Image (tube, rainbow, N blue to C red; front, side, top):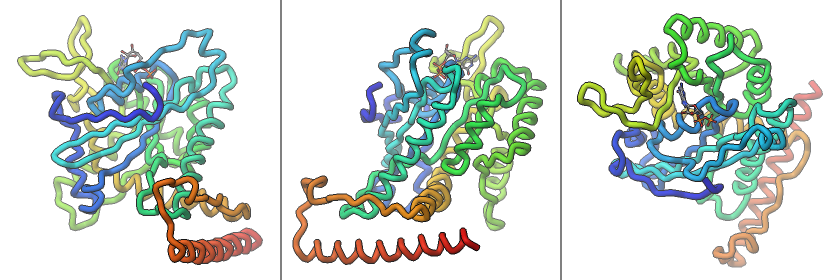
Length: 356
Ligand code: GDP
């Protein structure tokens, strides 16, 4: 799919229901009216089922024009970051979802570049946000920061690979990582339990911080507490994806047909697909808040500590539609000055802290 193209998509046109209409419970009414923005990054070796899963999660074809490179092309190719955006509307709630795919990840013989490209992309989104925040049209900033990263782990190995460990270590300070075991249908129940435990142990041993669901408030109802407990227990989510609808005992289900039976994607006895989707939907706001309060703040303070001033943005030239009166300009200049002073104070504080 071409970069940044936007498609309109209504759940009424397709079977199934994603569940975004539950978002008003989490977000302010104002954001519901305006629409909700969320960016998800998917990372993992090619062929692990990332595209299939994303399409099944959001009931849409995010990559209609996808071309899969052959081995020779892959050797020459570095990681390419491809954002695709869909607008999903359910019961009047709009979600502008951007999925950033990372084709080419792990394909090279030396994968150092894989990280560099991904880190650069994440930082670029932070930088753009920082610049827009100090610009004129602050109320209408488009938030393209990565709010969540699904990291796909191969079901064929015996736990994490060195590449997985290295990626998560380098990225855990920049993004909320949700580890996902791909193609769960190739594992027996016992193998799955063992692999999940091994992955969790290795995450802990390597000091990797993954996204953890927040504790429930004590006054939350029991049903919700139980749901969160089950979600926590399922980490790392073992998922299967499919984009075909099959008929099983008179019901239409999304599944994978094998000679011995059907793996139902949305059956919690078969895999954690539903849990992963519930986690994402019920915790979208938490993921956004962590992005703002932890990862973006990390980026901002690091940048200020380095003493680099935020980029100046010439709003008069860039936003052709914005007409700025003299009064506005003076106000804007005063605001910018205040901001610069605040940033200097933060930078000085950071320096003093470092010296201490
Ligand atoms: P990507 O390169 O990671 O985006 O992977 P794709 O989504 O293109 O899938 C690669 C291959 O794996 C395709 O043949 C899919 O049909 C298959 N596939 C996708 N999801 C699953 C799954 O959950 N289980 C199994 N067994 N195969 C899958």
